[in-house]
Image (cartoon, rainbow, N blue to C red; front, top):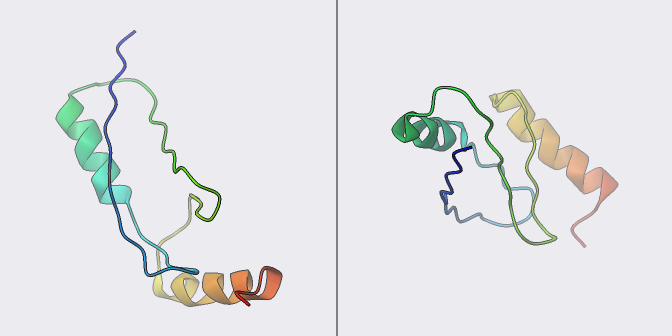
Length: 74
């Protein structure tokens, strides 16, 4: 089994910042020339998260509002 490890570094603006990493991951997979397999996306730390969402303007507004309701910044 072939295992490839790559790193993507991103800086966020903080609370509820949403960053689309789709193209970064696609580019790494393409560059690896692996035809079949799995991709594991991991983020260290307890104050960040990864989700799969449709990256569209309405959601970019709604999701931070939801986060503020369920886990207020202050």
